[in-house]
Image (cartoon, rainbow, N blue to C red; front, side, top):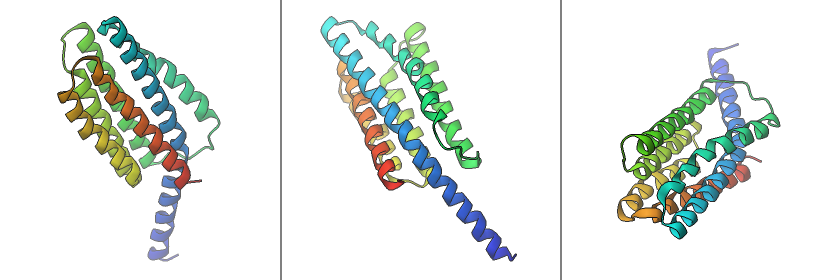
Length: 185
């Protein structure tokens, strides 16, 4: 086998793996998009009607609900061999989750901070980085819109209305998931 043929096989294998990851990831983008939309709206409405920001503690329900659902959905996925791209993708979202959970806990229990601004920026960055790793423009654009647009929104809007940026973020994730599903049938 020639060196050129070997490189062609490696390239084809990488592209097929990337497409399988995108095809399988569409469900997860939609799952987290729905969860983010619903939970942000519930917290917004409860905070708006009661005047109590304590409802933000419901954010901790998101991973409690989401991870078991993701595991259930993942059980039915076609097994995709792990490669460097899938590992990096998992690491990006693991780091995002660790930052989001840690910063939210610090903001709730130790030092008040502008957690909406921080979370929306790192979430947009994680989505953008995922799009770069997967060479997928809808994911890159969705992440950029969420991170940059969300940061501007978070600085302009005060109180419970800031939660609506996460509603928009959920819708962006959901739309991105639908686009991926259509792209990689």
